[in-house]
Image (tube, rainbow, N blue to C red; front, side, top):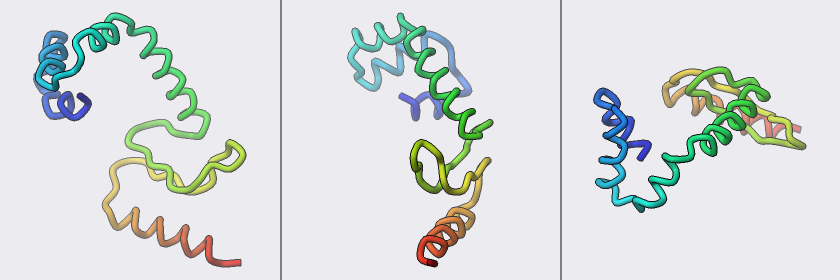
Length: 101
């Protein structure tokens, strides 16, 4: 559904979501229940947003490259769209750092 929404973002309206659900052959009862209870989704969204803010994410896209240790993120944060070379250099740096005593 996310891909379908992104591909069709220029022509979105509330009726299109039901159309997308039918095209994707989603279970109509489950889809209807999800749409009918936005508070449940909003609660999860707010929890995710709070977690992102807690670890310093303020926009999208943001990529975290590293690990979580004792609930604390250790690694590098990449904000914004980046070319592959930036990710490759980041991985190389972290791997080199991990190999050194």
